[in-house]
Length: 184
Image (cartoon, rainbow, N blue to C red; front, side, top):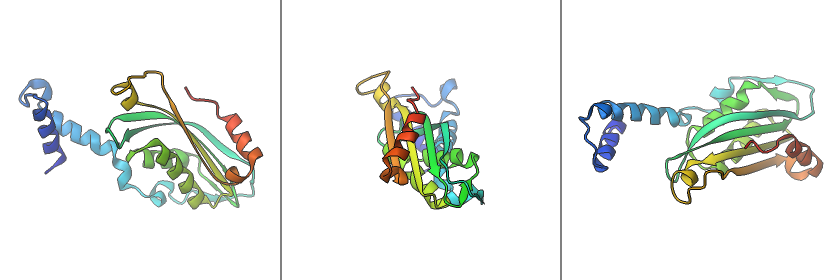
């Protein structure tokens, strides 16, 4: 069964008329949208970083803040969205700055939970750069808490992942956290 047919079945199951003018092409549009929203499954870390790892003597923290993202909660298929803040401690190599957004996008465009998304980004950056440490903070809002269930419109969630020196060095971790105030 195609994704388009699945959307037709869903619309019929809720009692909609697929011949109604406003729904004429909705199953096809919805299938295309869902394919886009889950396009991260079709990408690899090597593809999105595209050899943009460069030699560098810099050993100081590199911090990229406020990378916006949109993802789908794997529990309800509802959106969650927010901002990602990423820091790493280079060890002979640096990563092209746009690649932080591309890595975030690759993992966010999968059915996901925020806790895993945070960890996946940190581990990917550690793997691709060989960094001494990586820190990732994600602040987001979850439509599954806003549109349904408890209906809390102002709730946000913060997750963190520390790898290497960010996990073991309190001062390094504190420096990072002081540089990334809450996004909301």
